[in-house]
Length: 163
Ligand SMILES: [Zn+2]
Picture (cartoon, protein in one colour):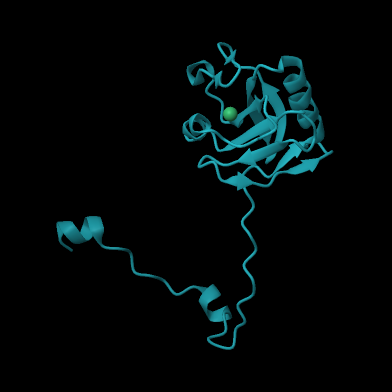
């Protein structure tokens, strides 16, 4: 075996038992189950806290980080150095602890529109993968969730803490 082969040749594929179990034809391909997001739910109490903080800071914005356990957002984490403004929130990501349980952010909009601004889109792509905006009047229906590209995602509101 030459040097190239030794480094780059793939090991010979071994026939697997799985192959033998799959019928060669006549196999129905069913609908593919949608892949569940890494973060798929939020606890109802976190939504309540998000709403309370929105009301408390209105008409200024607030921002916080979100912690998730086992796919469920369980906690709002206040970030030192976050400045809430009338139209934008500056969250200094340098102040965020290096913590893989922090999955994204929430911030409020004093307007009735939980729609990401251009600045929000920029920010979403720089930290985490699940971002919430809660808009006026800050209730269980006035928030939306987005992924890091600002595409809307659906989060289930749950009453069960992850165990
Ligand atoms: Zn915003």
